[in-house]
Image (cartoon, rainbow, N blue to C red; front, side, top):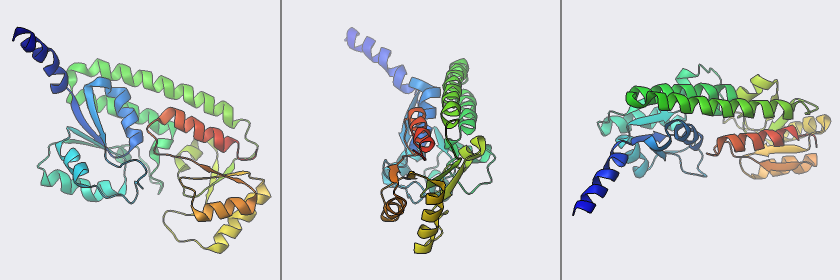
Length: 265
């Protein structure tokens, strides 16, 4: 009995002290886990391989948000529609962090996390917000944010060096997602689909012509859809699948930029 009681007392605080955090997309889980480490239990609202811009939360996701101590969003459409309803219906007292409102972006491009400058700001915001909820561990969160920012700075240096060898600053994507990153590096993405607007065969033909004139050998998309396959084939280029929603933020972003830098190879 004494052994059981000792084990119970030893393990109970570990679980009782964990903050329950819901994040809208997987990349945000990377930031939360790096800042809070074992002091948070993280759930990702948008499942893997789901379109975050079209997603509507299921019952399990609603429950997760309703029971969370903290909900971290970045401006996905479902956040604006569903989050207020869910929190109200559950009488939730969750601490909501709307990163998009703190990053001061007026762009239509919702992929704010793909900017390394924004990533550094996100790390600092989260360390401040965790310290607010859990003040006794403030130094822990601040120290973790500092370590993460050092890793982001190192990533930036590697990307700086990689992009120096890119002969032209233009690349082709299916859907605009790099405008925040582009502004940091003087890059220019040409997209087939522009923020949900319809496109036709003439748009594919025009983009193909531009790509061939520039000598582009790689085009990028989140999926191997028919139109991007046709575009790549017409340009004699390769279609490269990228995932901006990977939780493996640093390795994934470095891999994506490495491929973009090879657009003319």
